[in-house]
Length: 87
Ligand SMILES: [Zn+2]
Ligand SMILES: [Zn+2]
Ligand SMILES: [Zn+2]
Figure 1: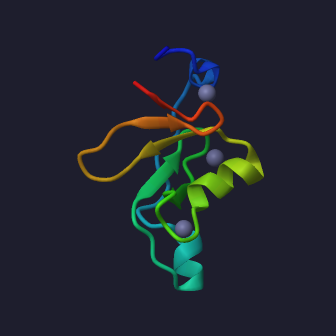
Figure 2 (figure 1 turned 180 degrees about the vertical axis):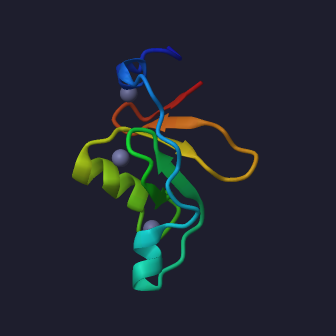
């Protein structure tokens, strides 16, 4: 169950987060709740509780399925297409 995500098994190198803000929200003057970073390319977007859901939109637009939380003290990863946390 925990390792049924083939996206994460295929990912050899995790990208480091490229920002400490959601730059798309900053560009439009919006706020976010939490930040997620794409594990494939490092782009940072906002979470599903945020108005703009830029992390999810990044998956929908670019097809990168995996994000990690970059909130302090959090280290979980999540797969959008599998709707599953990855250990
Ligand atoms: Zn997956
Ligand atoms: Zn955003
Ligand atoms: Zn990406």
